[in-house]
Image (cartoon, rainbow over the protein chains, first blue to last red):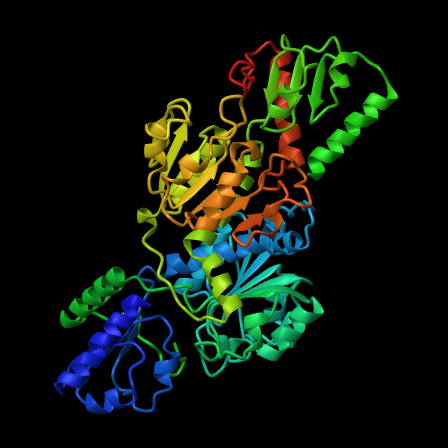
Length: 296
Length: 296
């Protein structure tokens, strides 16, 4: 992520060169020591939407507002990545790749898009953009989040994501594709497990652009091997970079990318932070503040 | 193509069961004998957009209006297929597939979409829909056709598709992706040859949903092997089904599908033909009539 890397480099540079006590920090995966060395912070910007790694730092000051990036070009990039993955599955391009390898010429007809349900798990700024993009392409879209949402044309449901016999299960029922864009919280690690896969359509496709920890990896591999899941497009992993000996690298039903679904474009990110910083200085209410008890 | 197959089956059935001299024929790849056995036809509908195979039949009556299907759901399906292929190339999913096979974790940043030119060759109902869909997704879109077209946001050029040192060459210059949706005519077979590949960006992606005969296959393979082209997504071939010993099957830079980019949905096709037939009976002007001299 060049934008992020160059900002991190700049940050590293500033840490090395001085010990100025700053009012505002703009951070991306800072070392734990950073917050000890900056005791006077009054505002912290995270250069991304996910703050799970930051919240795991014991040094993060809990009395200072933590702001996360809101969209800033990420939603478009993420929706595009997900659309590419959904179209790949819907048009059977994975099946045709296997047919090509086997020398088979065998046309298939996809069902009408409206009869091919796609579920979006997580309906914040990013999940909402994904759901709207899929709906605009004619798919039958369902959404699920902890709290209630309303998105035109999308069947939105709310509840706990462990309740596979309740609302979460009804959200999953018969999905042909499931997109997860959940933030990682203490509540939702491992929420996509064997029980979840029993509810989706046989041969469904899983697309994970949230966090790797939402998926129980052994259950995913078992569901792929059993044919209950037809394929997985994974951009995020519990450990990144994905360890060299991980079975995802070589699994024929797994397509993986190195955490590139929502690369943050530099310019929109800088503009958003500058605008929000100026608003803060004018004493206006802060937006996009992380709720520490909620975890995002 | 189930819709087409079932209609062809119905047609085969009717040919077998009677020898009624019909006024109107609705055909898809009829045998040459069909037109000899139907000397009283006053109107012929082709159940598809491409009429090249039909025009090659010496028995096709030249004094009877030949109508081809106009869109009827095909444009949406075709634009979706092309969008999936363009997004695949733009987001580097082919590169990531190779990295996955090699166990490499190496994020790449795509350039802004507006700096990633995509060319659409052929701007009829289908090419126009493709160009508009790509433009709506933010790509810099150029179009080329024999005659002048105007499409909002698309840089449309016109001329002869053999003139790589003229307007056609300027259309090709620096394209990152080239989509061909040309109808096959006597003039344009083999138009995508080595000379054309010298004009596009190094590593460009070719997507062919027109007819296989537009591509000089040996030149395409040479350009892929030399790295001048980065990949090809091919849905149509000079001979279909693609012969078992054809090098496309095994080429690592070729993704092929068995002529499924624009499957004709049954219901819209039937409705369109019924509406145009009713208009003809009312004596209204015919639309979508094939120009025999032009070839489409």
